[in-house]
Image (tube, rainbow, N blue to C red):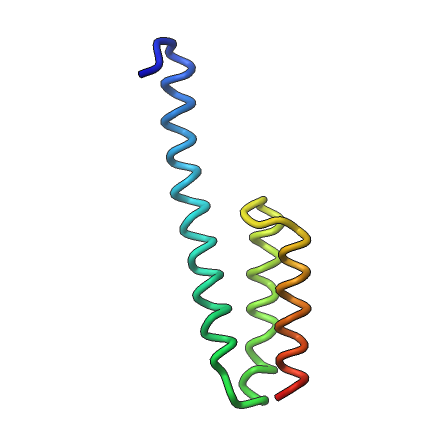
Length: 83
């Protein structure tokens, strides 16, 4: 266990941030998974901007890397075009 007050506080804040980031990463992943399961092109076209927006927000917050975000957006856009 840490001895200094500041390191104890750092451990506490890191745990809170980890839980916060995990929540947003999981919600993004589940939304992407649902999106990939869509088979209707109209519905996928309407849902794509919401998914892309969530991916961008997570990249901006540093939850996922910006290149991972762009790869995800690219793959999802290709998927919509293929439907």
